[in-house]
Image (cartoon, rainbow, N blue to C red; front, side):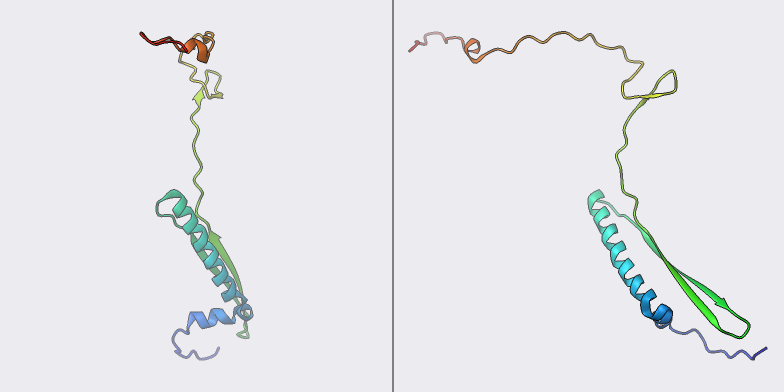
Length: 130
């Protein structure tokens, strides 16, 4: 077994820039910008604070010779979009209806015919017809 040396932690940003020849860092940057854009758009649409998240996963596998393989994954959790609710009423048969089943129905009747422009006008008192 080899003797460990206390080196202290190395810069994570520099390390990430080396993973997959820089592809991991580049993808993180792209996903960060995309996530911020989605979160901002949703916050403006809702007119309230909205959050999302980015998770960078590193899988590190080390063999007995001290060789390390590093794989990565980037997960973006977008803000949930708000969708309107619709009110329904539960029927006696356990179905959903958009009509209130406990409220009695009002009788429907025919509406009177619309009045025409000629029948709407009545001569004013003292007015002359031309």
